[in-house]
Image (tube, rainbow, N blue to C red; front, side):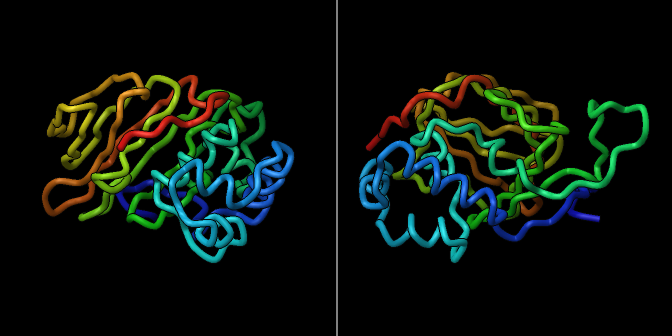
Length: 209
């Protein structure tokens, strides 16, 4: 059983087929490793290490890469193993122990909540471990789409644009993802949040310095 009862198929790093998909997509778009690195503000060696599975990216870096490549976050889960579905469910139900999981560098864990790949919707159960953050203060995320979040437990700090908020269990938040944003845990327990991101794929990432 994973933390907070969110059982899933643990993947300590992004599955190999998903990494290959990122690399293939980059090559199809005619973008070099250095070119992608320049676009998202990281070193070419980091991009190379991510593509070869040598390092786990932060949330911010992963969002930047998939956005620049015009991909949904859901593509990272597409090849994760899942338990067989019960007869008659027709692929509409995903049980807790079937959730594909990704554990990211900064102490943030994603569980996909959809039974199959969704083209332009990311539906995630996210655990922010104590002391974790989605990205650095000086590298806030900016991308296409609209985000909807519901805090299930713990406390989550959120900066949207120039405003900061403290969200506790039961609080929800909605914002345009074009506004620079970041999240972090507050206190001595993990924060658990349901996120739905609509319309994120299909447009290159913007930068905010």
